[in-house]
Amino acid sequence: MTEDAVEKAPFTEQLRSLGIVYWIANWMELVERFAYYGLRTVLPGAAHRLITPRSAWPA
Image 1 (cartoon, rainbow, N blue to C red):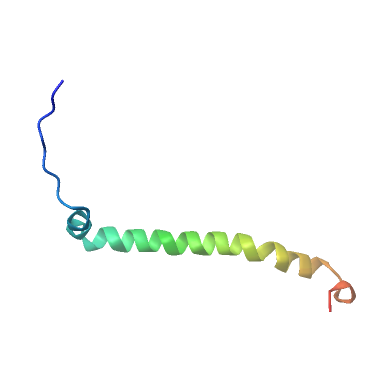
Image 2 (image 1 turned 180 degrees about the horizontal axis):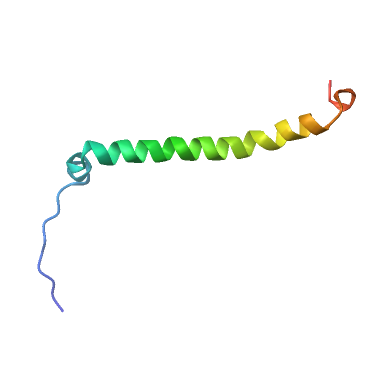
């Protein structure tokens, strides 16, 4: 079984060929994920502080 040799462009050239819309959409998705997972990290601690009496907080 033989395959025809297809010459591929280098990886950096492939990245450069992607349009600005691609990069903007990916950046927006990345920021959205940072916000989502950041909130999941911070929210439990904030909720704990809201329901715990101030006298029980660590010094």
